[in-house]
Image 1 (tube, rainbow, N blue to C red):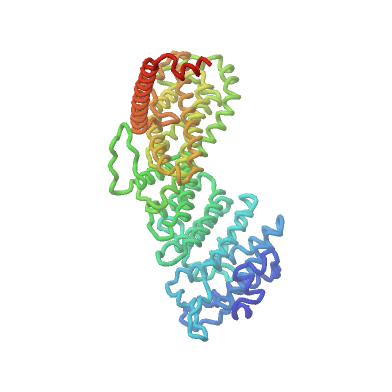
Image 2 (image 1 turned 60 degrees about the vertical axis):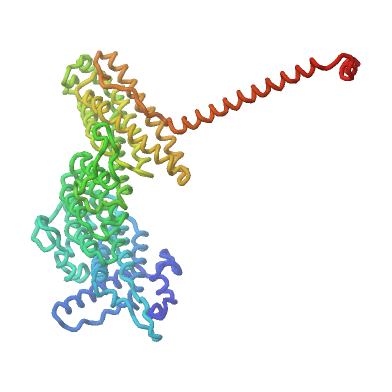
Length: 593
């Protein structure tokens, strides 16, 4: 630490400042020494906070000064490396010891980063009279939060993770010096209507309850503080904090997801500088979509909401129902995190969720293809007779329940796909949309192929296909063709990928439509009432180009006719000259010879 204060030339300063001179694997400090240094820093920070609250002189806190912070950084790196080298119960015990200490340091560093007077504290005056930045609290906060993320992601199962994060709840309740500082524990408050840090809540005993309480009382309030101030450059810290929250949210059961999904939705309604940055906005929206989908049994309502918000910022394509759409003055759902600069990138998050649902549908269809014939045989052929307007499948067999659930899930995807195909997507989001649509129609073909009768779910899917989805898709393809013509010289790789995707999608659509024609004849059900010839294929007719080619052909034809006339006239003149030539001329003599 002493060497780093003179310019960072010593081993400790170089390793703490940027881990280039000293690799993180060369951990000079043991786990016990690293924990002791971090615990000493936490105790010093708590004593300083208590002195400030009592309006007393603060004790010396050398570790949190510019010349002492490199030692803390090095201790964090060493502790993380020693933790990664352990296995089993020793690894879990090390994580239980480190997690509250690292969170305490992260809370203190985040407070310093969001403090408006922190900038003046981080600048010192050198002997020459020039100002030099001696300490940057933001990278230190990121180092701490990334270490916490490594501890969380290193847990092998939910029970182990709950055992680790339970130390955060214990430290928050006890306010011990080895855990959260007293000032930090008091500041961990949440929004009204949720159990805050200071509320007397019933202790959580289940692993899911422990993880949920840690998210609610520690990490989510920390995220709110990091994004609350537009002037504080804490977007990177907030992004790492959101990654930790998402890593914990994966282990939540479905019944515990909705409360945290509501919190994430509330953050999406906030318009702050960090939240509107693309990386953090993508992570926040992905967290909300994932928890909302799991809390609603896999529904795509949240993805549809995001796509509608994206369509508001990226403009809507004209359709047969709305040939001249007017832009809305206000966003439909007021997700202020989404704006014009990041709308195209956030659309990929919603399309990822739709793609995952289609993948689940394809897996269910693989199972149905194996078990459905046996189920139909066991039902005595009852499924062979269709019933108009109602499901003809007997409800007692689980295979038929799975088929109904699969068809319903495909029907639930239609609103999101309709919104997607009426949005002016571009780049990667457009490619993702084309892939998702191609997979959807491939799944539709499989679902209708294995069906032994048509029920009301089949009929509703066919009706939506003819009336809206197929027409919107062809409008979407026409728009993408225009973009391809405009940017063909800018991004040739993307153009080549789209050239492969568009024919594949058109093929799947036409294959599904031809299947509907065969099914209509087989079951004597009219599924092609609203069928019309498709106007878009894997090529586009350019009328202006055709007119130019026709003009060029007419000019070439006129030129060829004039040449023929000139050629005939010259041949006639030659014949006349031969006729006037006298006999016995030198030419004839030469010819005879």
